[in-house]
Every structure is written in C-alpha cells, then in structure tokens.
Length: 108
Image: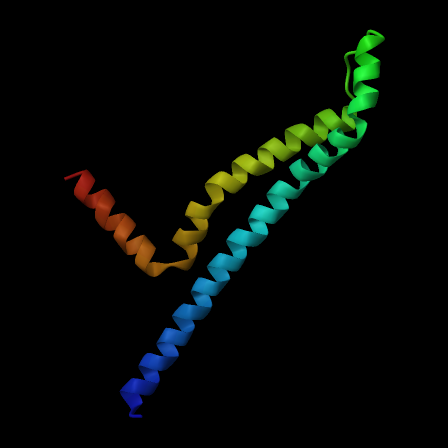
C-alpha cells in the first residue's frame, strides 16, 4: 500500500467516523426529545380510569405537572423535527456544498 492509498484509507475512516457521529447524534436527540411524550402516554394509560372518574364528578382539570410536561414534550418534538438540518450542516461539508450550490442556482 502506497502513501496515497494510506491517506485515502485514513480519509475514508475519518468520513465513516463523522457519519457515525451524525447518526448517533440524531438518534440521541430523537430519544431525548421523545421519551417525555412516551412517559406521559404511559402515565395516561395507567391513570385513565381516575381521569374518567374525575370527569364524571365534574372535575375537568389536569394536574399542573401534566400540563407543563405536555407542553415541554411538544416543544422538544418540534425541536427534534428541525434540528437534523443543523446537524447535517454542522457535520457534513458535502451537505453544505450541495446546499449552497442549490441556493445559488435558485437565486440566479
């Protein structure tokens, strides 16, 4: 193996590591942003009978922590939906180059 082949192999390993980091980041962000909603759904499954009983007795309110957690989990899911674009921009030079080429061609 010559010096060019070794450099190309090292560059490929570097690119593979970067892609693995991108994938890992996306998965971690997905989990962090969706676990609160999953936890709230599980809580709702186990407390639905209590909620039905409260509604029958004229109580239509939810605990403050449920309202706050629901709002926070919705915000996290919105952030999760939009953050992947920034991860790709930050981590992939090829993605940035193609993006800028498309933007330039659009505004010509």
